Image (cartoon, rainbow, N blue to C red; front, top):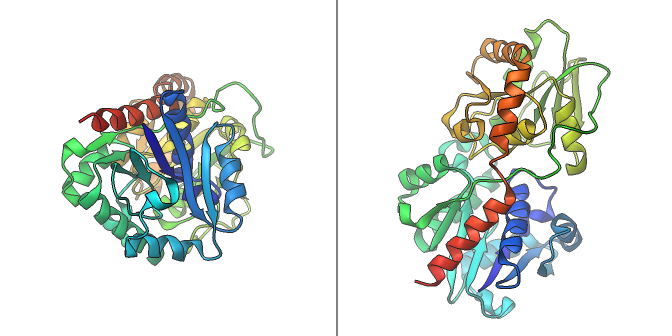
Length: 358
């Protein structure tokens, strides 16, 4: 098969969706071997080609990247106008996998996408207008036109059926993986003392204000480190002297940041899966996580679950994780080991091949 994959989001610093695209694509290429041809494509910004190629390294993959001065507008127009067909730019193919940023038209072949979560539909108050518009268009297109719809969790698959009316037979759960760099042994970041860690874009859904409030209820032994790129929305309390804001952390520095933490806290109000949870576990760090059911699969039996709306519950969870550290580390390492990008890619390729034969 010849499978073409939209990698447009990799023109930005990778976060959850970008990491999923990069990891799953590496897994698809590995599973494909020399039997199938995989091509990464993107209409992207003028600086996009260099960023995308860097993000894809060292995966050996053909790229078709078209730098444009107004790439977002071009992708939106391509999606809405419905022409030219992707075959005009990419040649013939057997399957096309597109992402959240556009819904490119095609003449033939399997049509596929990935739904990471339906947060913009359920909670538009936590999203920017641009994000809401993109997701509404993409999710409606997926329900109407896609032969295969990958989700990163069973929760998201069931949500897609309940919210969008997508039949279960079109849905394939392809769990995210944990990069091989996330291991328990190795360098540890230090902030001149023990610290509680949160990792994620600074935005309302991540619920960082309540994490700050919970941290203030503790005994003061730990600093609070909140690593992540600037998002949007008001983030109060982050100017506290005990709060460290290192900003966006590059991928090669993230494992040491996890390993150095006394506890990793993920108080998010809604997710599709929650990749940082299993990254922290694989790095040998005990995890405290929101009890929202969207995180059940990422947490398994290996995390302390807390009420994300209650700072006292979060604070108590942190204290419990510190006390149960050895037990939680063992359970976390065992749980995280089942998530690999090789398995993600194999699942996705198998879905293409099986549907391509019918």
